[in-house]
Image 1: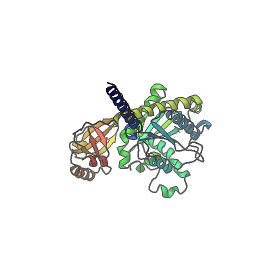
Image 2: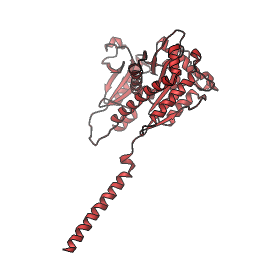
Image 3: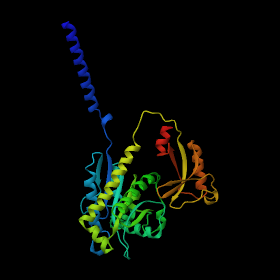
Image 4: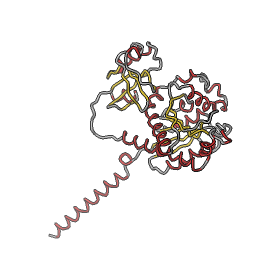
Length: 360
């Protein structure tokens, strides 16, 4: 009888030891409990010898830095986010270096913070993503922000072929940047909504244009224009601690929502999905909703239009075979769509071409 009782006790002890070992393994296993850290790079525009605009005597470089620091402090409270700054004090950083900091950190998001100016009494907040073209007003804003190039040493060689005053320089975009456009538009829309709905700032919309600092990055990126320092009331607001706190909070909330959306999209399961990968040729994107008739696309047939926020993307040559889509790309380029490129989708989710080929 005593032997049976001892045996039962030993069995219980063994079970407890097994459970303890299992719990210890789980708690110390990085592959099970490790949470991805989302790297957010905050870029305070201008700095040092480059003051930015000086509307009403305010300095853009100072306001941009103070707002960036507000955002960084708030985001750092989130355990899933790692914050990096291109500058944390009044120093000049080359535009290429700002992008380099984000690229080397393999950042998930790049946010560049600025203030606007104008000869009129214009006011309001706007958010920009990198785009193929912009209207005349947007080009003027891009030219002002790109003027930071001329403060850099040896800028002629660094930016050879790029003319900040040329509308033609708006057109060249890399494949990597264009693949990130959807996410850039998503975070830009969240920021802009917070500015206009929560803070009641005049809505200057989400726009696309050719900002050099955005051209340098290879992840989703936005450039924020907090408002106009040349407008007395708005300049006073942005120069105040209250204004900087409110604008910083609006950006922070948008970034947190964006990161939460990323988390939802990256949840994995053991379920095998047999949906085929679709390859398409993107031939155009912009705000104009164009009928997908062949005469609108230089004779190309079966063009597909997809709404992405307030923008539209136009695809041609949908096929599950990459080699066939390469032929469609050649056809599109022969029709004059020289900036066309191939994109891939699975279950409606966009993939990089490298990912898609690997999965196939």
